[in-house]
Length: 368
Image (cartoon, rainbow, N blue to C red; front, side, top):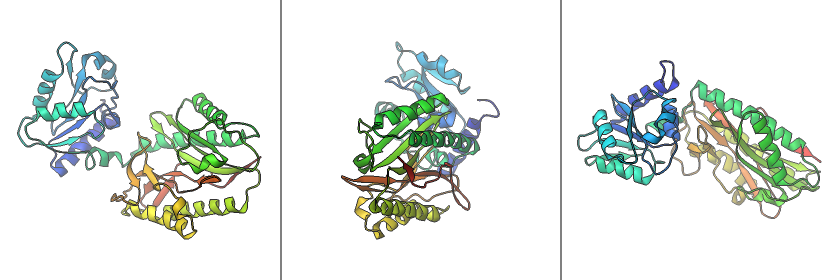
């Protein structure tokens, strides 16, 4: 890592957090945690690979097979092992270098690491006290820095233009799959990849995780598009809803209710507020309108390197929001056999409230 690398700052911040929490060792697998902290994202298979961090040492247990490819991303030391040797000696060497040999160490484990990697590490330690990354790497990742903000913003601006192009392409007889293909092509033409895409016509929109199929668009159908790309390592995520033809009074009322729920959640989101209060603000609007049973999911999720990560904006969440958190606000109402309406924004929390990444208005998309 160069002297100007953001990874140097993240490693220093992690060590400060380790000192605050009495953590002796942090162990990360080949995951988004590792990528965030070091820039390294090695091939993940059955060969053990880990990044171990102590107060004065950080190094990788690295399969020799992957070392050359990973070396371009970091200057942290590798404790390499070959297939004919196995990882045991290299892991012992790495733990020695970390000073992680005393009994009863406080160890933070990557909750996304393979179980066999985790057990190999725990077996090599002497009665460790273990927990997951919530108060160390996870906590630090939840507060986005300037470079992360810029990357997420760029991904969302591209998403805006893809969704605009998708709604503009709607015509009688076009299928959900064809709109997905159009969106994917738009991303690719602009240097991004498809992260996910759910295009829902008519009754399909009543299922929050609908998988697009061959349903063809016709007059009088609601349209819901929930899509995201990945650009320069960071994803976007946005949902817009509209109608092909003239919406009836029920659709108009449901759409207006969901928009009020979004506004209520945005108004409630402030640093120091519990995530469950943002969920409650949105849910209360929908419940009071008589659609409480039709709001089928939490109000939101965090977004960063992973498209779903803490903090989760849910009724059972104990998370307290902080400045720099990035998360979705996406209430919805789903009427089986009819349609669904969801409106989603990704926001970053600032001192004075949430700032929306998308610049595409949430107003009803009318077409046809």
